[in-house]
Length: 178
Image 1 (cartoon, rainbow, N blue to C red):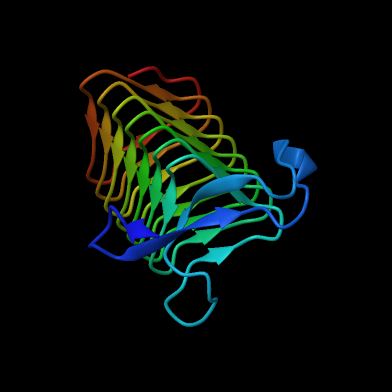
Image 2 (image 1 turned 45 degrees about the horizontal axis):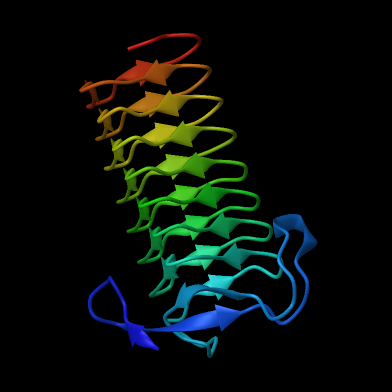
């Protein structure tokens, strides 16, 4: 038990109660941290085959879907939802009411918050920040200090990189490189 990163909540270290072959985890393996071990109102929801590893934390009403992994020193908080087979890792933060869909990867100090939706096979990393009501989908990649916010949409095979800001109601798609 320790005091967590998010708002001073108490978090508890988890331990696998059975093998999780998808993640290469054996029964008894010590994992990451969750706010409560009792699944009641206000507690995180963790999928049957999900895994939280390292110093990662899932707090408040965060949800981690089946086969998803939260690892490194990542944080999932608020009412954020991490979909099936998604990965949130490194020092990434998924918070607010963000929805990180199936097969999405969020890592390397990225922040996904507010009412954002990140879906399909999108990758968000390298200090990127996605906020507001933005949507990132398809096979899009957002990284390198880029910001996507307001009601912007990034999809297809678009790549947003560098110190770029995509906002308002902008739409970036297909094979665009910004």
